[in-house]
Image (cartoon, rainbow, N blue to C red; front, side, top):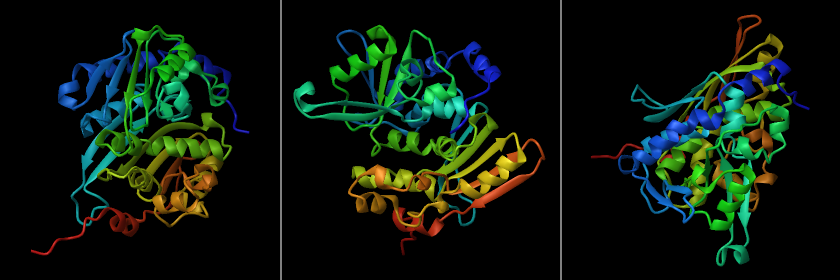
Length: 342
């Protein structure tokens, strides 16, 4: 089983400002600059803020970057980079960096909180979404938090929902209850994957995907002390399955990650076992894989969910080990980018 952080590490995390406090100014900026970011702000009767970043509102790349930073609990940098060098992988890239990779990626960014409601509860259509972001560390509904040895205690929080409609009141009430918050102290951000902002915030999970794979592999999480990565930003597809396929392909076949770990043996092992190419399902577009398993994520080989290419540096020896590869042709075939004849 993966080891929890050491006692000293857990104490350091508890003493430091929590992920909700660190991300609070980013949430305020998202709301205050809603017009510029092309997001829409509504409030429930009780004062809960709901940010539409792609359901009815257009959203934007800038909004997606800010939402990704919120997802990381204010502990990560996210930036858009133009890439027009000779034979680029893709013209627009997302870069991510964090010096608190475990807390930023697993304690905040990871989409691990399942929120659902039946059609009877909603009075219409059933609702399901995965929640990510700093509010997870208040609710601590996932076993992962026991391993992390971390819980936040702030009186204000934000949660990002990857779904194509605004949440019903029953789901909002559940989040408020589980987080122990007053209604006007919660902000919910809704980012459909087939929206511009939704595409950005999913691709910005390239380092988080690597950290989750480290966890799945059973490596002690406190081994990882730095994380950085990049992945191409595709245009969103109007179809939900294709949009999800593009964002996954960006990481599985185009994502690059550089981790720094404590020990040489861990660095060497991760360079070999971490890349997505270790999966039996590797090599096909993700939308095709998902469809072939009757839209059941749990039938897909978990080893697939990893970046395409990794570098892992060891603090113990100073050596860096490399593994995996980019599949440029697969991405070009899926996303286009072909030259149009005059």
